[in-house]
Length: 374
Image 1: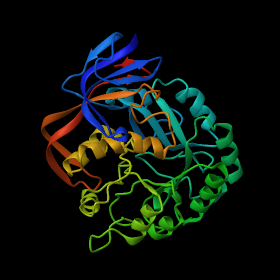
Image 2: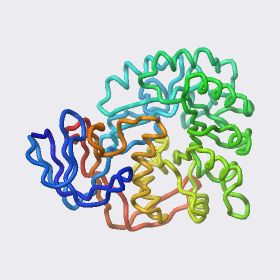
Image 3: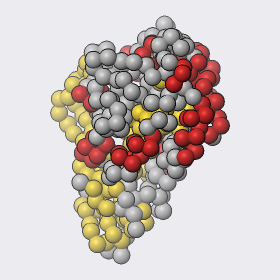
């Protein structure tokens, strides 16, 4: 007998090329079967008329609530949206990762894995009142301290993070990235790079990214946009994708533009991962949350299966989490039940450009560790 059975939903699992009506069973916290006539279960949930996908993964969030000025409460954010895994994008550095772990990660219901910031204090001065770039002072970027912390917490840390640009690194240029790359290489981890206003330039950053590294804010507006003046995709961006760099949306408060997105999608350049970059400011708009960001891509014409791929298996692979992102039997028993609502909805990018759409994603429930999570 299974522990939980979701019956009659439209199951979309891009990793298994599945898009069909099916039942999914969960036993002992894991996916145990998928198909028809799966037998009995202790609990049965009728999800007919809904879309059932592997548990959503938000690859770019800031959820060190109470320990940083930009963190939001992880369960309060994730649970209503059916997000079963949150990847924190460098809120904590070597100096406070232990506190993040004990006081937030270990106490939360939702699964949390952090990218460790190369800056010792992490993102420590981010608010509506002032911003101090944590990578602006190179004295805070000690590669040995970061590497030691990454190794000490290797069971939860999924990568190294660096923020570059006028906001994140001031006038330090490309230097913080070179330090972060050295740490990532020694730790055997991917690097997630934030890029805002120059310096450094996009071309400097793209040239350094390795296969498996992540460029977040990949559809940001000009300057440092991936789109050339003639609206084509920049050659260094194309070259980076060819060598295996991962492109993540990371919407946030200042890093996603409709014009950039439309130009990139016109040329067939889809993001590998769709993420929210939710934090204390962006949660009030224009990003709001992961489902809102996914809905924007729905209206931009991105196929439904590709949107789901970008928030399930692709996000899992970007974070090198091999135990989730698909309904293959034996994987973590996480699932999200979605509906595409109809109505009139307004969507806004970081420049204030808006459009109205007729559809958006809504959560109708979730499964976490093989149990109904509501």
